[in-house]
Structure formats: structure tokens, C-alpha cells
Amino acid sequence: MKYLLIVLVILLLFGTKKLPELGKSLGQSLREFKDATKGLADEDEKKQDQS
Image (cartoon, rainbow, N blue to C red; front, side):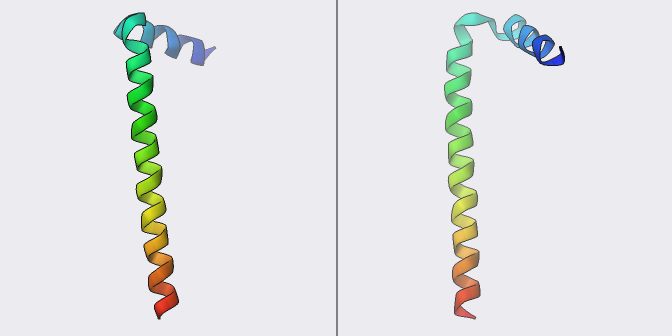
């Protein structure tokens, strides 16, 4: 029930025309965040291997 309310609020705030743009930018942001955290984890592993 609360997810339906959240979706309705988002629709009211942004409208249906903006939702695809918001979804695309959110997906890109999440992808960049995952890549950055993976890069940090890889660097930490390299540092631990060198010690």
C-alpha cells in the first residue's frame, strides 16, 4: 500500500512526461556509483595483496 502511495506522489510531483528521464538518470547514477565502489574495493584488495 505504501509503495502505491509513493508512486502516486512521484507522479503528481513530476508528471508522466518526466518519469522516463528521471528513471534514465537514476539508472546512470546508480551504475556510476556501483562502478566507483567496485573500483574502491579493487584498490583495497590490491593494497592488501601488496602488504
